[in-house]
Amino acid sequence: CQVLSTWGAAPGDVRAPCTLIVIDDLDQPVGGATVRLWGDNQPPETGHVRTKVPTSVGAFEATTDADGRCELRPPPYRPRAHAFKQGVGCSKPIEFSPAGGSDQSRLVLVPLIRFAHLQGRVVQADDSPAPDVRVSINELEGEDDPLVFVTSDADGRFERDVPGGRRVSLRAVVPGSSTCDYSFEVRAGTTRNALLRLPGEWTLSGLLLEADGTPVPEGAEIRFWPDPHAEELGFDKWLHDHDARTDKSGHFEIKLEQPMSGLLTASGPDVAGLAR
View 1 (cartoon, rainbow, N blue to C red):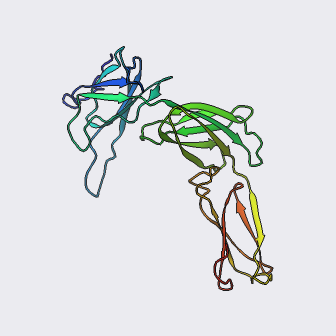
View 2: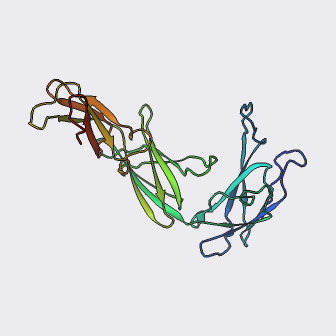
View 3: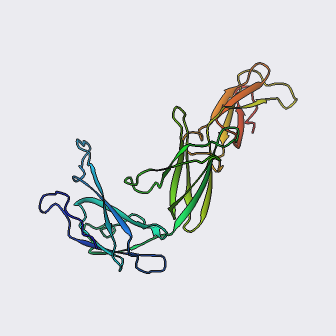
């Protein structure tokens, strides 16, 4: 059992000791689990005008003993922590105070959730493999969770264990290129496949006609709405709508970053209603 020190804080600037008991999904104690702890260097300011932003201190690590126990002295301001052990699982963020209360718990039971296995592939816009591409993995749960990076192999593939029961976000990191995030849920004990497509340039072209088959006059607005539930899309850059105007012959072209499914609409003063 390792006890964390006060990290140079003045006397009285640390909380009372708190004992964690880390268990697995069978309620058995987990020895040798790592507990990672953070805190802030000052209390958050109140009011509309804030002149100081608290700085995060940590992460500080401790290890559970054979009984799964570990004693910590949490920092005084906004303490947060999580526990994990390779091959066993990872906890959700650890709460040191009862919900809605200001008192600190002296004993906290910390269950580990089994990992999920992530298998991914990075491809170019034409579906050819993209080797040696760095992929960032963000668990999206707790601002202190650092980004993890993996690199695609010669076939563009990568894999990693990630905490189960969470939402993760993937991004292909390509210098000089704008890539998007792919965010999804992963379930404990399962394998999740992911496809990261690097951006390219694709054209959606078409012809807008009246009911009698004649081209719609110039200037009708054509808008493409990507399907927000399409698995091949990232959520932050490519889910905005794309629009164009018809030319004199009723033709239009819309530039897309990748092949995608969605809805086309047409509207304008010379269009009777809304075409879909």
